[in-house]
Length: 127
Image 1 (cartoon, rainbow, N blue to C red):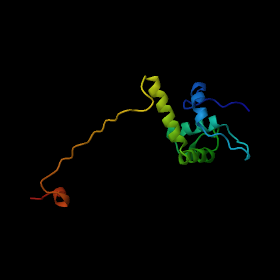
Image 2: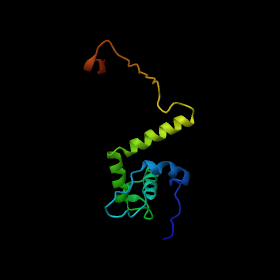
Image 3: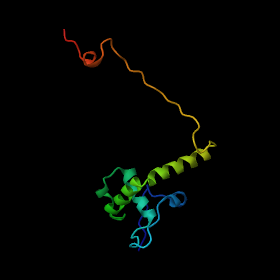
Image 4: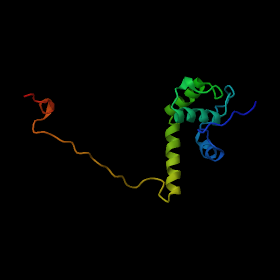
């Protein structure tokens, strides 16, 4: 089968080398996978980058229901969180930081109040 033209959202070889170990493998003993994990990721990234609805995915990508099922299952089992955490640690190391943050900055926003609180403080008085 002739390879499809690449979309701007497709992962390149270097990116796939980083992502591949973080993606769940195809389960053994079941039906063989119809699409590679890389092509599933490319399809998910297409939807995320383009903002299109799942059923509006191009026909040269795996069927949208297959892609959405993987996306949903990986969200439920924590795969996306695991990928996020692993990539964050990698970026922090590349920037010369410890893999985990050692401090956090919390900011609070001031809220303007009136002398009267509750419902009465929010009502506009008509004159």
